Image (cartoon, rainbow, N blue to C red; front, side, top):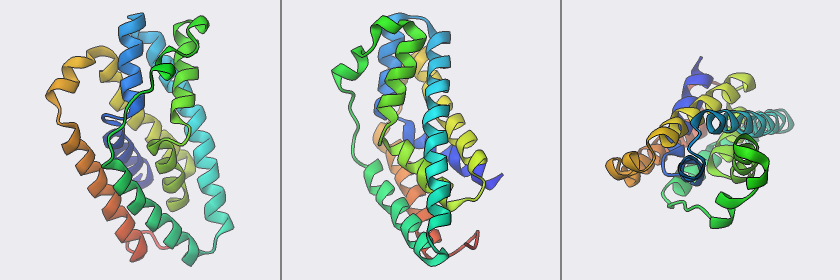
Length: 190
């Protein structure tokens, strides 16, 4: 349960103000069809995060416990720093794949936008940290949906009322704490 809850919380906070959340707002404004957009986000996230989770599980098995602890701990600390860098959406990303319909466009755009994104890297690190890869993928997917569903429905109204630097600061602090705890071997022992 810890792997699921930590993964959900970290990704939900980390996704606030992320380019994929901005992409959700652009798709919602462009197509005005929330259900296929939400389903597309879900499918793209499951596919992307499942691959990232498998990679994280492989990394956990390939490295010894001490090396894994250092790699994961330092990855979490690096993610903390990365969370403090504002994200922006490329115009090409928002326009990519319009000929595939609302659902297809969303799946393609989200899958590609998540490649190498903070939440994908976080999923790899979380899957390496926790042995419950399925729980991590379920948690990161739920976190992605929790952050993006309101963006699809409420878009600009949320962005104007929520302090993104504060949300990013909280997410960075969580990643930093997880990194330090991992380096100190506190909690789950590898």
